[in-house]
Every structure is written in structure tokens, then in C-alpha cells.
Length: 239
Ligand SMILES: [Zn+2]
Image 1 (cartoon, rainbow, N blue to C red):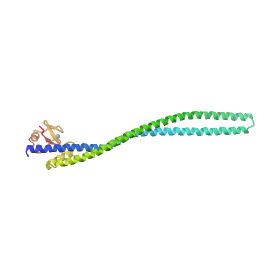
Image 2: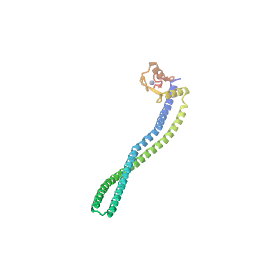
Image 3: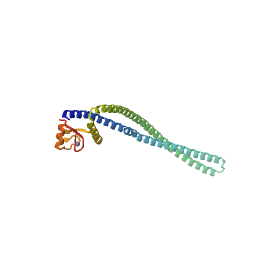
Image 4: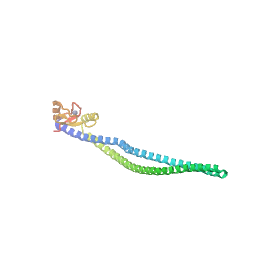
């Protein structure tokens, strides 16, 4: 094979390789999209947990208010019962004893009412916090939905780009002699990044190992397929 023919094949292969690299980048980006969507979604988990916690706090405080109300009502009924008893009592002493008991119960009611007011304030605070977190989560959900929509759109575009690249690649590969293409494909499958590489001085442009003189000479003659003795990639002399 003469130098010009080999040079022509190498130029064709370089174009094939350029498409292969773009195909690989497309594939990589396509593969990454599900995890990018997942990581966008996972940002919502903290906001959701915070909202759930605030809602649980609010629920607990409302339950405590309900409890306080039931207790106050129970004590009021006790007071009412004692007052009824007072009507039937003849002795002044007994009347006074009941009065004292009623005063004690009314003190209890007052304490519970004060406590209920505090509970109501803290429930209002919890309600405000829950509302804020709900708004925050709503905003975050909108952002994440937007991100996911963009990623879906990117996925669609990448698939179209990939389709076109594969088609182009197929067409470009038909002009490369079969033995070269087979060799190139095998190296590409092994190396997964680049299969055809130019010399860099006396070294392989990919693995950077210094090559033996006869390989360098052969690459310069460019009469056949030359491979790097270290990494196995196809070599060409670009000078
Ligand atoms: Zn090498």
C-alpha cells in the first residue's frame, strides 16, 4: 500500500473516530439522565420531611388544646355538682368546706386556661411554620419539575442526535477498508476512548510511552497498520 492510500484511510478513520467519540459522549449523557433526575427529586426529600415534622408538631399541639378543654369541662362539671350539693346542705361548716373545694377547683381551671392560651399561641406558631414549609416545598417542586422537563427534553434531543450520528458513522465506515475497520473497532472496544492516535514526538499520543525506532519508522513510512507496542492503539504520523 502506498503512503497516500494509507494517509487517505487514516483520514477517513479519523472522521469515523470523531463520530464514535461523539456517539460515546451522547451515550454517556443519555445514561446519566436518570440519575440526574433522581438527584433533582431527592432534593425534595428534606423539604418534605421538614413539612411532615411541622405538621406532626401542629397536630400534637392541637391535641393538647383539645385535652385541656376536656379537662376544664370536667372540672367545671365538678364545680356545678358541688354547687348543687351546697343547696341541700344545712350546716354552715359543711357549706364552707364545699366553698373551699370549689375555690380549689376554680384555681385549677384558671391554671389550665392559662396553659391552654400558651398552647394556642404555640399551635399558631406551628401552623405558621407548616404554612411556610408548604410554600417552600411547592416552590421546590416547581423547580424540580422544570429541571426534569428540561432533562426529558435533553434526552429526546440526544436520542435524535445519536440516531443521526449512528447513521452518519455507518455511511462513513463503508469507505474504510474492512481490515482497517475491524482492527480499529477491536481497539476501540478495548480502549473505549480512542483507537487511532498520532505520534507525539517519539511517543504514542495516547499512552505517552516512547516507541521503539522501528515502529516510529514504520509509522512514518505509513505503508500498513502500525500499532503502539504498549497500548495497542493504531498509530499515525501527522507530521
Ligand atoms: Zn500507546
